[in-house]
Image 1 (tube, rainbow, N blue to C red):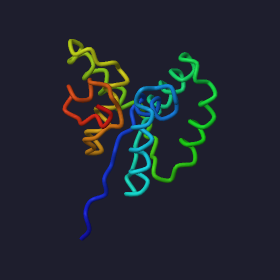
Image 2: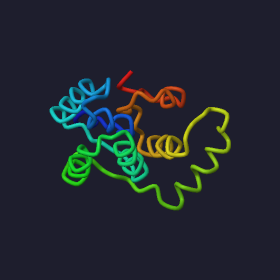
Image 3: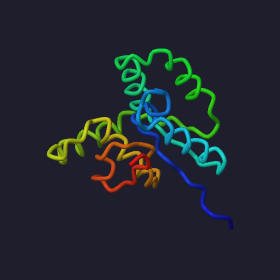
Image 4: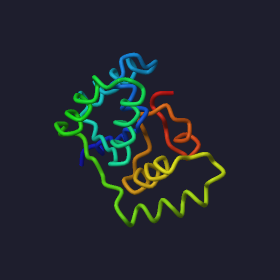
Length: 140
């Protein structure tokens, strides 16, 4: 049996760094994505992350990056966009309330639960909340 395929969760800050050329983490995010492609890494994100990223690109004035962002989401064969859905939403609400002293956003919490469910430990992000929650941020 071969080695298990590597999986990485792509967080809002990972997408943002990848698509906004002015971002301090842009080159590192591009380099990691190239490596993921070469090594056939499986990528995961969620509908909440897509929503948050599109909004962030818009409000930070990176609107020219929006078409490429949505095209990448649609066209990537290595990427799975997982829907949070009703059951995960309810679980996230409980987790969010239980850990409300940690400063996590609700979207962060949905990502943590998805990552645990999918047994993913690495995230393309520089959001320190992922580290605090026990994951490995790759843009740190």
